[in-house]
Amino acid sequence: MADDDHDRAFADLDQRIRAARDQREAVGKGDGADRNQSKLNFGTGLTVGIELVVGVVAGVGLGLALDSWLGTRPFLTILLFLLGTAAGMLNAWRHLVRIGMVDPHGGKGDGQDRGSG
Image (cartoon, rainbow, N blue to C red; front, side, top):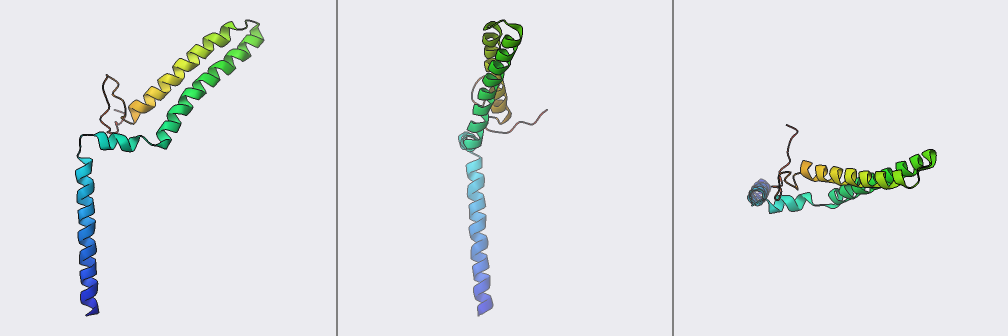
């Protein structure tokens, strides 16, 4: 009797696991919106934000240091601020392309990771 209960419990568990896998696969074969949504998480936002901030801070810091050393204030600070901002935006864009959130040729990404090749 106890073995029959265990067999039924395992069969029920196996059936629920298969149903959950089938449901997950069905969701994964959608139009890509579900996959894109899973890519938009806290880590992605933090990474893109850090890319932007680091570019600007590095540009301004280097510009201030060079301006004080060469006595060309504020020319290099402004120039390197603009270059740092552009570099930060480019790094953020590359990150979003790498994870598949943005199509580099225009349009919306398909949510699939792209390999390096």
